[in-house]
Length: 126
Image (cartoon, rainbow, N blue to C red):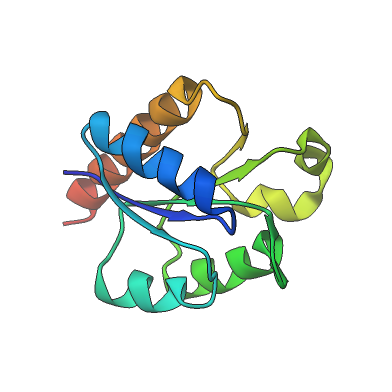
């Protein structure tokens, strides 16, 4: 089962993603604190991160550097309500950028695409 780590400071977004992504067959770990996510990356080894950019007290763009330093091969999808961030060069560290929407199908498809690529990459490395 694909393990998705969702980092978003809005409780209603986390609940929505928990529910909808679980229905799609993913195992979901969600949290508001981007710093605690480092512990999850180290201990529970998610297959992918869905990361909000505008987090209370911190920026997802700052945290992405820390996540990549901890696990360079871990795919990250930036997920924001603001399409203006797409032109920020810091977003280039992520594998994808998806604007938040009530239709999560593009997010689901990107999760499947990126985790499939990661699994193939890991199999080829062995």
